[in-house]
Figure 1 (cartoon, rainbow, N blue to C red):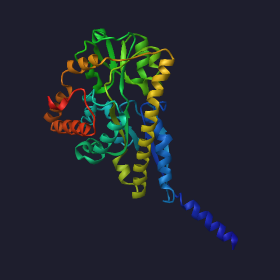
Figure 2: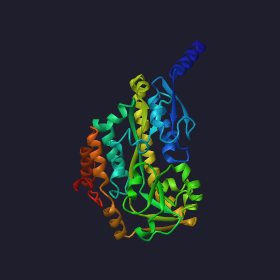
Figure 3: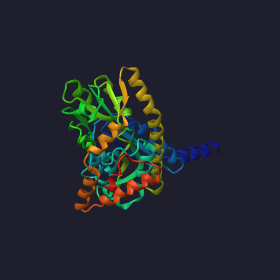
Figure 4: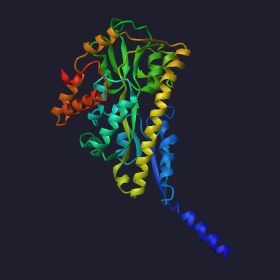
Length: 348
C-alpha cells in the first residue's frame, strides 16, 4: 500500500511539470550588457517562480550576441517567430517604431532613467497609439522597459566648447545622431560592438553613449575625454513576445511572462542606478578625464539645434501617426512630474 501511495505521489509531483514550453530568447548584444543580462538574472527566474504549481514550465534557450539576430534585428526575428521572446529595441528601429523614439528627439529633458522609464512603460502598456507599433509587427509588449542612463560625449580630444567639435566625426546610434545638429561635428551612425575598433583606427573621433555601456565596451581606453553634457536619459525598448505564440499560451503562462518582465524591469533599474556612478568612477580610476559641461555650453548646444522634436512630430503627422499628440503628451507628463527641460520642444 505504501508503495502505491509513494508511486502516486511521485506521479503527482511529475505531473506538476508535465507541460514544458520551449521559448527562444533573442538579443543582438552579448550578455555583458545589462539589458541582455536581465533575462537570465531576473526575467527567467521570475517566470519560473510564477509558474510554480500551475503545471507549466518554460525551457528558455538564450541566443545572445548575434547568434540568431544582430543588433536591431530582434524585432523582425520575434515578428517572424524565429524567436518567441526578445528585447525589442525601438532605438534601432525608428522607421518601424517611430513614436517610441519620442525621447530621442527631445534631448536635454531629464537625466533620470527611472523617471523616463516609468512614464514610457506606462504609455507603451496602456496607450493604443504606442501599442500599435508592436501589434502591427506581431509582437506583444510585455514590459520590463529598457531605460538608458544619461548620455555622455566620449572623445579622443578634450572638449571645452562647441568649437572643439567642428569637423570632428562623432558616432552614435539611431536618432541620437540628430543631437549633433548645429555643433559643426559630423554625425555617424554606429553600433556599440564596433565603437572600440572604429575609434582606435580613426574611423571617427568619438561617440555619444551612456556610462553603463561605455565601461563594459572599454571605450574610455580609446576615447578618454568624457564630457557630461546632460543629453538625458532615454527609452530604448521593451521586452516583447511573438503575438501568435503568446496568445496560444494558457492565461497563467501569459501572466507569468508579464510578471517576469516586471521583475526584469525592476532588476534592470536597480542595477542601472547602482552601475552608473560606479561606471563613471571606474573609468576615472582607469585614466579617463571626466568633466561636466558648463551651463552656458549646454544651453548653447540645445539652443543651436534645430527643433528636431517638431520635425519628428510633423513627419509622423504627415504619415498618419499622432506625432504632435505624443510629443505634447510626453513633455506635459515630464513637466507634471517636476522635470524642468532645458528646452520646451513642444512649445516652439
